[in-house]
Length: 144
Image 1 (tube, rainbow, N blue to C red):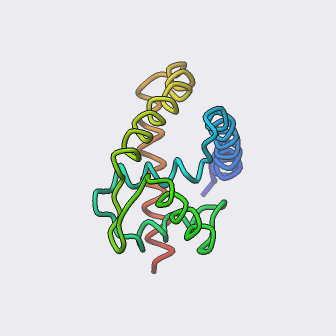
Image 2 (image 1 turned 135 degrees about the horizontal axis):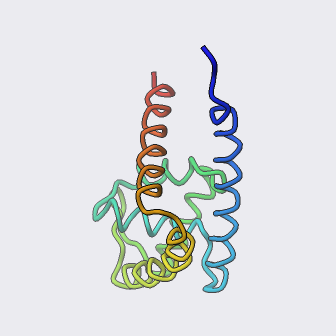
């Protein structure tokens, strides 16, 4: 069986895309003096909450390249001190946190829309579905 050449290019292409898009996001958020880690935490709470378990959020955040268990605890403590999140075992966005998330979501969406609108929507949809399926299968393999 011959392996398609795209299989060999996939990992490197995905890594370069992730690195480049992270840098674009980092620079874009820096204009608002927001770190990507803050954005990720707010986004996870907004999309998975209210009442997201602190432990589940901590595990998700600590699994990123930029955070670990200690820096995740510090991030959540800072977000609480800044009045953006609240809760003990279950976390929610405060009204200020929801306002910031909504503002950032609109702000972050602009460059994404500009970039992706250059491509056929069916291709973008296929790419998203494919990456979601790959992620799900890889996570299943890691869990077993």
